[in-house]
Image (cartoon, rainbow, N blue to C red; front, side, top):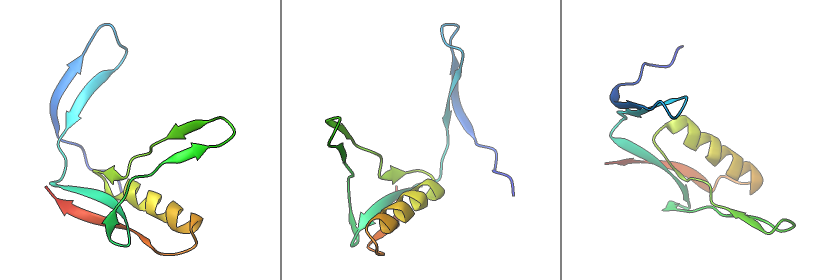
Length: 88
């Protein structure tokens, strides 16, 4: 099954950059990663390099959010993480 064509709202291309920026229309929903039914933020701390990273936990596509939930549930050996659909 192929991915549906996105609806382009605005397009901007500049001769200074080799790419075009497209603003796409999306569903009227966002998907949020939750822990015990509460929205969360993530922070990854690399102890040897003293670096911190804050990955996203809010997504406009369901598939990306489900991948994050799957990885977190595997890492913490449970099913406490879930993806909630929020209407805008």
